[in-house]
Amino acid sequence: QVRLVESGGGSVQPAGSLRLDCAASGKINNIYNMAWYRQPPGNQPELVADITRGGSAKYADAMRGRFTITRDNAKNTVTESLQKNSLQADDAAVYYCKCLTRVLSEELDSWGKGTQVTVSA
Image (cartoon, rainbow, N blue to C red; front, side, top):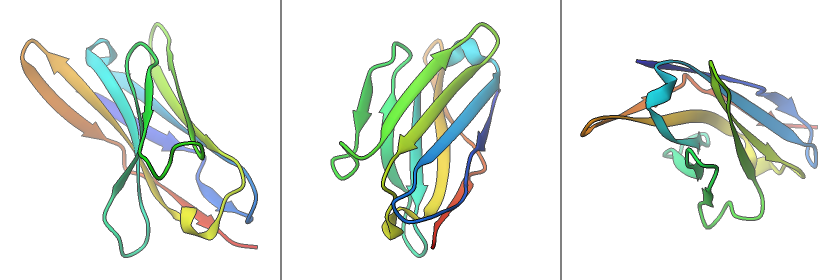
């Protein structure tokens, strides 16, 4: 079992910066890929970026060049972060952290509860 907890959301001014963190705990040695998704109001969740255990990042086409995903594999915890400058109104969403765990041939997705980001002056 892996538990994911997001932090860093809140209200940000337009053109401001955003940094979100996600801390994983539990059976972290089984974590492979981690990712950030976001769900704007009234819309379906969408992938922002994905990062492998080795730190190789992939971005959704609409997100490439706008967000930066990073990951830190420490001894007792794994964290991933998402950073973006120059926030726009359409960046307002609930941002979710997700990880993929793999044990032998069994894969499981785990999700955090999400953190709300609003963009307002």
